[in-house]
Length: 337
Image 1 (tube, rainbow, N blue to C red):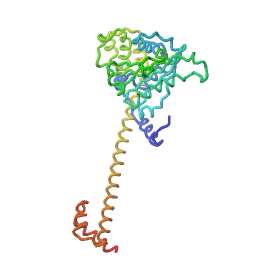
Image 2 (cartoon, rainbow, N blue to C red; image 1 turned 120 degrees about the vertical axis):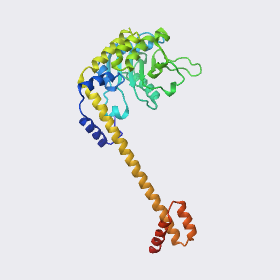
Image 3 (cartoon, rainbow, N blue to C red; image 1 turned 60 degrees about the vertical axis):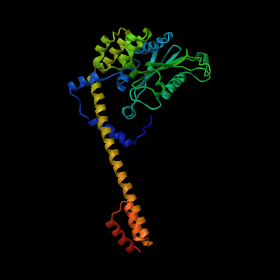
Image 4 (tube, rainbow, N blue to C red; image 1 turned 135 degrees about the vertical axis):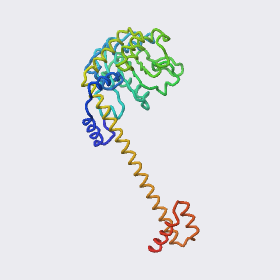
């Protein structure tokens, strides 16, 4: 993916990262507890290298269970998008995962920061998964089913009227509203903030497995044990996910690097904000100076064309020019005639 910022800014970003001090053991322990699966590097490290495909399979089946859809075959191989650290922080990206099993293709995305047009991106993700590993001109009856899941740390404007935290999007015939290939193509948007409107005990039983998994997805590692106890989580996939994330963040080097990246980005962001402020102030000064020159040139021209002094005085006062400056402009006009 091409950077939208000049290379020099990326170099500055990486320099700041490299100069960010290492963490103490106490800082590492605290930072470890603050991490979640919605963190881009935690997501990538947890599912990278074709790991934990059983968790991915179980998560998709938990979403399908809501609508009494049959389980998918086991996901056999997955791939996590390789995201550059500069893109992660500058674009707010989180790792995307694609995978496939027997006659099924899947994609799972996690997005923490609100992103304009994400609903479009989600549908495009489904379209991309439809084409993946399927040759144009082949036997379309053999095209795999496609399921995509989007875990969102924000609410979609397009689903503002939807109260439930999980929404399944399918094609439908417009006039009748009859689903069209809904058993073959589904996109799930899981809006994690909407979970605050519910309690697990109040939800239909078919939602419980997905609820358990979402609790593990959005929770900090430090509260996993409390969350498992409070939510009475017994779903094996959710418990396995919690264990996988804890294993991911166990190495001190992983936590230290992640925190240093975050602190380095905060410094870089402050630098950019200050640089933008100075640039804006300079632009304002230049604009004000250009306006002042334009006004004074107009007054000089009026003086040289024998406009009555009372009119010139009124013009000057309207533009904020003092009488003393008008006198100076009078002399300047006479000197340049």
